[in-house]
Length: 506
Image 1 (cartoon, rainbow, N blue to C red):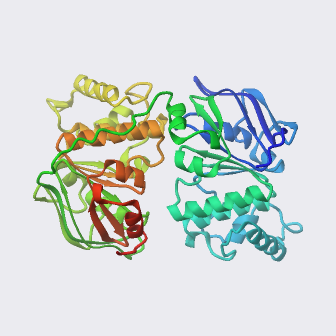
Image 2 (cartoon, rainbow, N blue to C red):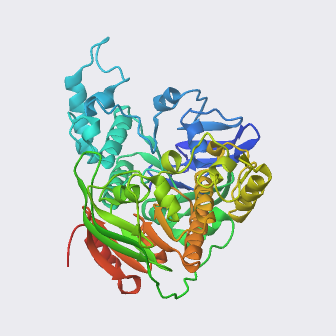
Image 3 (cartoon, rainbow, N blue to C red):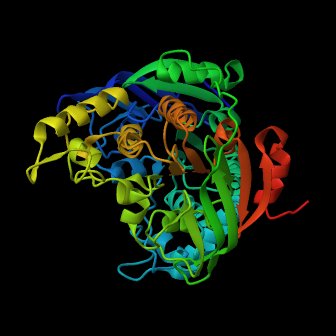
């Protein structure tokens, strides 16, 4: 890390308000040549807002920006790109029907007039690929690429525009562990070749692995700045949430009871009509958390969708408390007392245009005494939703706030509150903490353990091995739609689970 005293980026006294919310409050931030600086913080801490200002998406209300020693006014992303600043978001801006080459050169005006010089563009791209180790076929259509390969295209797109300051916004949120390793190799090469990187994240272990220096934001302010070698994940977590986190959860020893979920010979196809589940057999018992580990795309999503009533299997049966689940019927799952926490809270879990209260009563508005003489009992509904908002510490203006105004962690709390209010016999939680910060994760983990104590059986589907090991009583690994291994948590080793996740049977 070549840290001369002149930063390549200096942001001074940056303040940004959205109506009555201050997203950035007098922030000072610097990035030095040849370093990876992690910008860490909970969701809503102001990380992305600050970088959107550096990339010209937003203008700041107060403050100054210097890039390579010159004071700049950035009124659009093109101004930032012209000064060598590029930003890669979680959701890629690629045209899926076009090739890699077409996506990289679009909008750069390669060649004369309206004719793009594809030959020299291809030459430049191949030399960038070799220099930075970003192998991806220039003629492949984007839709045929994995998420990790699409991310490489985004990086190439930035490098092709001669960007040497790269902002990466939660770049690993969509990647499998092996793809994350590959991305980190690329980032190290970028820095060696003279780039500087801002790595926005809330994943502590990754930040410790990849960064040289860490800046922590909380509620729109810088609360800490540390060299990575001089801190640890625990200290960073405390900076992020402003309090000591629990050392570990108290997981009471409880003997598992009778089966609440029985899956027999379940088979299913995925959206491409390929086999996603293959004769799956599984049992989840009362007072038990069964953790299902596996790399994304091995049948977990299809299994959750079948249980939630959103996908029909091709064979097999599912019983909840000995009663058969009617496939393709979400109401059957609800009536059999299943709490459903889907991985996609925005599309499947919640109706974003409804109010917080409407989402809280979505599944039981016709029951739970919310009706009187055929009319909705508003008083009872208001009391019910206010109680849940308080019990789950949901940060919202009030019960009538539109759901899409909430942060990710609070959206997840709304869904948990609704699903657990009916005291479910079975909870199916798919990636319950994906994309959440440490404070929200801690809260959700405690709630899941509480349900286990209350007598529910829990199927926890997660790609986060820490989560699986911290919460589960028993662990199964799903690989290509089959169970590769089944082990009690205290007898499980990470190495063994990792091998099963890669399809290696010992």
